[in-house]
Image 1: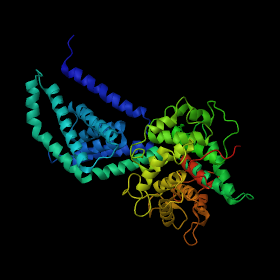
Image 2 (image 1 turned 45 degrees about the horizontal axis):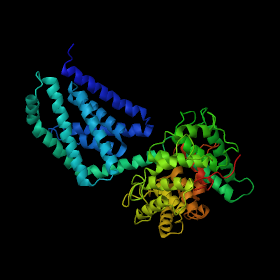
Image 3 (image 1 turned 135 degrees about the vertical axis):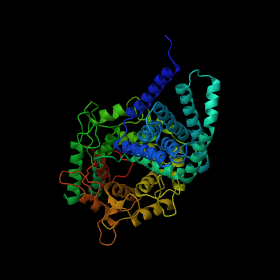
Image 4 (image 1 turned 180 degrees about the vertical axis):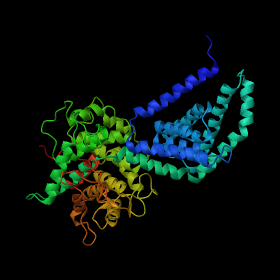
Length: 521
């Protein structure tokens, strides 16, 4: 039986699309990643519709390539494929739709490969040229689809004729891509990389982690000032108890109580509970324990942020990052170290890389720690703060706090860089006592917790940081601890993410990163 070229090509195309969507599904994207990918796909579709009057001039290819460049292959593929499908609701569905889905999906994967090859550091002009080349490649694939679908003999001459007729349109597409990328490409990449940094390192997405952070902060206060039970002690105890009750039957923690466990939230919860002194004397490794869950998930940690977080969680829980789960995570982390001393070219990832190595026992004078700290110091902005990537990125509280803790852990606690960074944090305290994610924004538990940890790491007493008669940062955190111990993200939010409670705990305990077991109970 002879299989027609049309049937064979569509079968291969269907398999490719299924593999792409399966790849994305197996990555278990968080709700925030899902929302971001859906938004980008809608933007790609809208860009195609908005520029419909200009034949083949559209920013869709740029949006898809930049999505893959910043977020990775699977998200980039889905942005391209879904954007094509959604835009054809306007342009009309037909046998060309799966080809467009596959072609734009491939553009997203190519963007991810480009990002990996360049460390996601590419200038405006090279990035624009890459978008132009992607437009030509997209056109070549669509020319091939026309040759397969609408011609009879499928000869080389027919393909060349189709490509020749389509050349002006393909050139218009490529030139338009270059112009669009020159106009907005770097700005889009910076915004997406900021989201990526949050996903990989902050893991701030849902309702359990906040309690752990606040707990650590409250505990720090209780440890520093042993005294009869105070409001601070009671708030810390409630937060710790709430976080302990949020544990699932498999030993892990999810974004909210009774939500499916993930390594991300389990890592934050382990650090918060350890800071609160909730690590048991004997560390069981059965399938219902925190240690058991961390052990099972350690071998699967591959991305830079995942490896860093897992190392910190293992050390906080009294486990070895070199011998847990059959993997040496320290060796694995060192493979992410760049020649310039950074991890991923991002301040946040580099800070956590330094903290993870220090937690595992590397001395401040160790080569990787020393080079990482030096790279971080060079990225300080003129206002004293740090951005998510390199010098010049907008300064933020979380990124600055992470940088301060890493520099302090690397032996630079008394450096001028740390003093200026601490001054930036203090200057941006709001009148309610808390700190915002970015200057002049509203206060939140996570940013306040991170700032407290940075102040403690730098030797600054957070009880003496206040604007006029406002609360201290720790006072602000205590106002967010509910009767059940759950910590709200902010005064105006009803959400009580587990990761917020976990991070708040670390601050309430005055325990900067890296957190090591303090006492057991």
